[in-house]
Image (cartoon, rainbow, N blue to C red; front, top):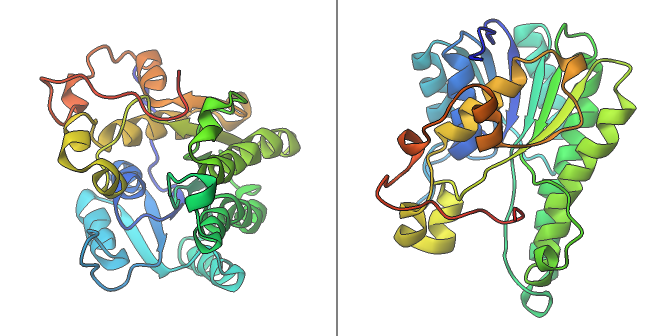
Length: 276
């Protein structure tokens, strides 16, 4: 059942959208003619990471959307408030929030400095909570408001904590926002869902974690963008509180061949963290 719905004229506020999955979701929306707010903190080219808020904005415009690049460190409450205000001033409201910004450190308890612990919790859990809180008054005015957190299904299996307690707590914090806020704002018709990849995704983070071998066993960011698009075009009142996996979403949309998403179609992609 291929969706005919569109994100034309919808305004998306995407955290961490200067590269990777966040940018891919923005580009997919831009092809429909959406307005995309690129809320990220990269304004100068980084030696190891591609993209700035300005290069992302150029790509969004080329793809057919309207872009607003805003310098926003989601750890800073004032910056988030200012960025959301700029988005509303420019586009008249916010229809969709994508909580994509994330920090990762797959380190055990004795090898996780508190500075790194704090970074993960400030960006992942607190940043998601803060962006949701600041966007909600505007989302409540939208005709089909969606919040999508890029976080995993909740599972209390010890194996998902053992090797990286700090990271798991920070990512599950994002998922707990979905669990709680979906119920809290059900009556307002604001959808809260999570999306997580079945396999590793070819991003800068994966490159830093596993280099070329891990990239070869990954899928491209487009699979997450297509899955996000399918979720964000569904009726918000009928689609909330779900922990979606990209492949399952696309299967429901009629996709059966996932090879076009493979970085290297000759190898099996590796299953991502947090999924059995």
